[in-house]
Image (cartoon, rainbow over all chains, first blue to last red):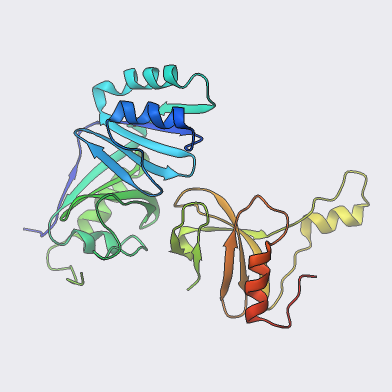
Length: 175
Length: 106
């Protein structure tokens, strides 16, 4: 048995929201919807099955149950009619992986050029970076569990990369 | 290794997370300029040994453009700053002058 289990998460609703993140109306629309606070720079917040992540200075990503995604897009557009924005459902454009096990930081550190030590990377952080040769975003669910999203077109690459990186006996036990 | 700090998302990352965008602070030759001036605008680039201003994009991160001032010889980064400017800000110039007293913005 490998020390890290890698699973593809079942279909998850994802919505990209772009606009002026300092706009109070936009902030209220998001927090009302997710039940979380509004994320600061490089932060991800969760409430039940809903999450909201800071992706760029003008971009958020909302995660929610797949069945609710379409209705939520409509609802958001409705509440944001007065301010310039973009709301798009991207559920089918991205893949979500879940990695858990004590060696998970090492598995990811093999492919991502970032500091994944417990001192630097903690739950609430989200980091957009690359894994091997493709773009990915990662965050922690708890001390031993990471979530990773990548574009759907590179799912197989990421799947193979992670499976290879997590091969039994290959972890350096550095962290 | 070249480490840059993206001023848009605050991340300090290594070079492979960014895409280089070439020389910074170019001024487009006007439409009524000479052929030579337009040629120079399109193709003539500085290639200094020392202080250089460049455009970079945080391609694998927030996707935003920014400017960086660095030394091409030592890879020392003097600072990064917003892309929405046509000249290096004072704090960047001061940082360069602190490390390279002979340097001046020509």
